[in-house]
Image (cartoon, one colour):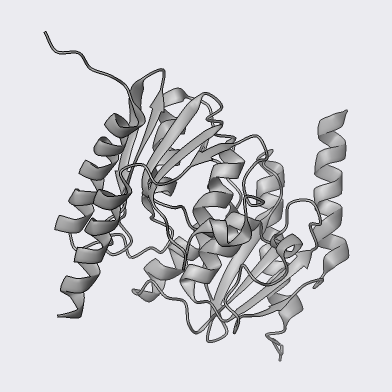
Length: 149
Length: 149
């Protein structure tokens, strides 16, 4: 009998699967899932190149898909798992979504929202960084190293 | 003979037409146009209610539409006209788009990006607020006054 434990690592591994899809499609490898009542209701990966659209970050698409799944635009009972610290745009979108919990993998000191402290998010939002950080960061490092060749 | 002058007020009036479409559809009345070489290449208004999507701000849709019109994801030769000061999400998206010029109508001290100074935008982006501010702000005030009735 297999025991499935719905840990943060479990859902981050699902976000990593999405990030690898982006990697394989030559997109900056960021993936996200949104979870509601221990179920994944949205999966997305970065599609800025394919869609020719700077707004097509994994988180943005996941927010849109999760709202569609729930049938309401506020994600007040959901958790976002994303392999990279959200940028300013995504932090702003997450604030509008009223999502109470955000878990990210790799920190992003250059483009991440946290350069501005937690003030871009809703004061009640819980945010945790560094879950499976090594795997999440390595995927990014490999991607950019290969592109520089 | 009619002389058409492509002033900031001219394009802001076009953004206001979009905002009025939002108003009529019972959406928060914000409209935007993106201009390239004196031509409007994208028009959009807020559709968060109709699309059930907190990310469907006028600016976000205009960025996506303009990139599609140009055939490239960076809007390096464009100007955005929007009736309301962009929020954090939209400022982040505008930063990614590399748009060099943003003109907005009404200031938004509660939700606008400028609470964080200009640091959310690219340092080279020129931003001007207050164009047709009275008309842009009145549309918002009327909308929220009617909803409170």
